[in-house]
Image: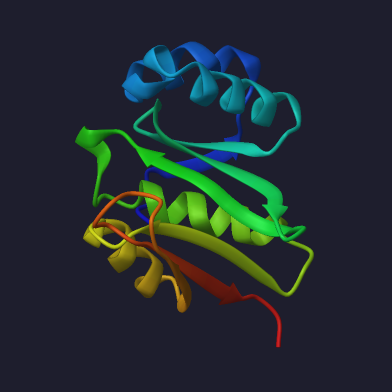
Amino acid sequence: MTHDTRTRLAATRDRHVLGEIDPRIASDRHRCDEIDAAIAARRCWVAERSGRVAGYGVLTRNFFARDFLELLFVAEDSRRAGAGSALLAAIERTIHADRLFTSTNESNTAMRALLAGRGYAPSGRIENLDPGDPELVFVKFLRG
């Protein structure tokens, strides 16, 4: 995490700027609804760099009733600058259970590197969600 990155729970006022950094929010009604619900449930965090929102993360409990990082998005101009790691750290601190799960496509090498750097271990593989690009599941054990 870089010294100029800070994280906080997302607020309703952040909704507009999240749509500016993540174009899928404007074009995908499901993504838009998911973000709105996460903000309302206080399960969405934002990372700010130099006073502007650089990314966001959404936590759910929809993965076998376990904490699951459903979505992590960092604005293209803020990638590989600590925002993703800061978001993971902030979300990990809120988890009361002993582990946190997440997943990413096999092709997403940047996310896989971020997860490895934060101590996440492979936990499974799901075929046939995206043809030719398996979903890889990861876990981080938070308490021993």
